[in-house]
Each structure stands twice: as structure tokens, then as C-alpha cells.
Image 1: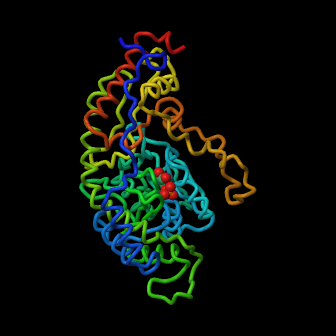
Image 2 (image 1 turned 135 degrees about the vertical axis):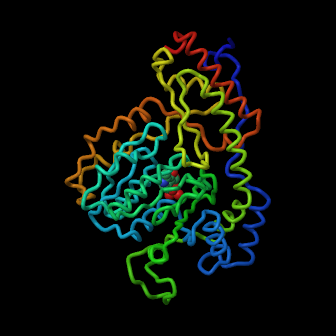
Image 3 (image 1 turned 30 degrees about the vertical axis):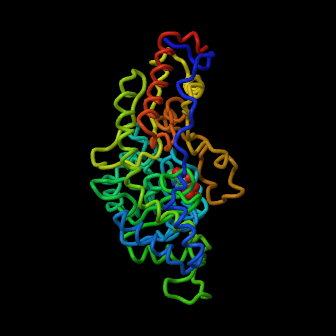
Length: 407
Ligand SMILES: Cc1ncc(COP(=O)(O)O)c(C=O)c1O
């Protein structure tokens, strides 16, 4: 067995992985074309073309582009009718914006534990969280792996509660052959730097509902109305618009997304095949209705019980020394400091207790088991993927055979 890099052996890999985001020639030409020939903001052809093409690509009728995924979430929640004191059901295993956008809408995040099979909100626990204040259910397609949308949409119909999908990580992901995002009332995407489509920052809302999308237009555009006057402001919106240069970068990436998705699909399959053979490592599952994942992050589980009780942190250090950056990712959102600040800032949260929430599936995943690999690793060539596999095999074999090296 070769010596671990953490103990002075040669690392499996010393090269960096595929650079992300990619400054392709198409992207640079698109930026220059927009800068030289177009409005850089309102009225730009690049923005309307991007909105049309993104809604077509994502199997929806309408799209409003926004300055970020977070602003898209706020706009979508307000447009779904969320008012002060309303409750919005979300999973606790997600990026903070899923919860903070709810708070920014003066509403209350209600956490529902995850389904350990997919790490998405557990659809069978949603109904017990519904109250007469519930306004929206907001599943997150975490890592680009769709939540159980059929069950969630059934609940939405049964109770008359809207569904807004947080598809920030799910560009191109599909549920029963339809791209996610407009399966319920609407959904949002992020184009922040690390996402599978990136303009540095940016976001989008898609929907098939004209009335909802008109409201989104207004909330994201200073309260203006779709065909109204420039200085007519009908509700409390903001300037949450995407700029034209970002739109042109995203348009260029719509041309490369499918080929990149195919690379991610292939690499994901190879990694799953080999890594799932390691006793103690579990591959994240998907629902049978999922026809495509976006493979944004590679999320798997490490069970220290099957690795001589060597904690996950030691596994990470050894993998990182081998040149493969693995890390833990999110903590349960209800443990974030912002939920322990008391209700000075958030008086509408007074009657809610976030300190004593106990969600075993989220805690087990976040505290002990999750292992993340960044999305750019999934864009690598065969040699890159083999390096990831070799590092997993080297480190896990060593933990099994020589646990004393990890004390
Ligand atoms: C699940 C999820 N929701 C919302 C967001 C917010 O997007 P942004 O960073 O573009 O505001 C992100 C991304 O960072 C995310 O991963």
C-alpha cells in the first residue's frame, strides 16, 4: 500500500482540476458584442433573448432574469403572495439563501427534515408542517437532484398552497422528462460563480403562469408594471434586474450546457460505479421519476462506523493531501447564527423556537456523513476522474487497514 501524502508519501494528484467558470471564445465574443452594440441594461436585446431562450430550454412559458438567485427567491415569494407572518416550508439542508429570502419577505421559514435517500425535503413530512399560515412550499433540488415533485404537487393541490422550486443548482435537471423550475407555480435559478451556468452573479425565475410572472416583473423592477410608465411604481419592488453583459454570457453558455451536462453525466456514472463499491461510502439516491440530474455537486456519504471510527474530518485531511478537495458542505440551517439572534430584528419570529429543532436525518448527514466534491471536478477527463477514484481507494483502504495512522 503506498504511503499517504498526509504522512509524506506522493500525492495521487498535484494538478488543478478544470478551471471554472470557463472563458470560452464564444463567451468573450458575446460580451464584446453586447458591450459594443447594445444597451447594457434595460431594453437590451441580450436580456430578452436570454429570457426567451432560458424559458424554452427549461420547458416553461416565461422567464424573468434577476441580479441573483437570492433576489429571484425574494421576488418569487412576494409574487406568490407571501405576506408578513406567513409560513414557508423549506428543507434545512440547503444554502442559507433559501431561508434568508423567506425572512427578507417578513415570513417564517418552517423546516422539514430531509429524506435520507436523496437529501431533499422529505415529502412525507410536509403535511404535518402545514398550518393555516402556510403560504408556499419551497423544495430545493439539492445538488441538482430533483425533490419528490409528484408528491409535493399533490400536497400543493390538496391544500391550495403554491410551490416555488429552489432550482438554484438544477440547470437542466428533469422530473419525468420535464425540466424542473415551472412544475409548480414557478422556480428560481442562480448564475453565481460556482453554478453550472455562471455570469459571476445572476438569477432567473421561470413559470407558466402569466399573472405570477407579471408580479415577478414588477417586484424585480422597482414596482413597475409590464406595460406601464417608467415612473409608475405600484408595489414595493427593487432593482433586482440582470445586466446585459451577464445575459450575453449566459446566452453563450446555453450553447455549451448540453455538452457539459453529457460530460458530467458520464463522469458521475463512472464515479458512482467505483466509489459505491467501497464499503462505508454511500452514493446519493434519486427518485424513480428523476430523468436527469444537473450534477452540480457530487454528494456522497461517509459512515465512520465502517471505517474503524475514523472521523470524517480525518478522511477529508487525507483526501485533500492527495490532491482531491473533499469537504463537509452545509450545516443544518436552523443552527446558523442568524436563527439564534433572538427576535429583536425579526419580531414576527417571536413565537418560533429554532434553538430546539432536532432533525435527525439532516444532522446525521451534515454533522457526520456528507462528503462534497465541487462541480468542476465532474467536468474533467478520464484521467481526472481516475485520480479521484485512486485517491478514494488509497485513503479508504488505508483507513480500513491502518486506522492507527489516523489517530
Ligand atoms: C440552493 C440555493 N438557493 C439559493 C441560492 C442563492 O443564489 P445566489 O448566490 O445567486 O444568490 C443558491 C446559491 O448560491 C443555492 O445554492
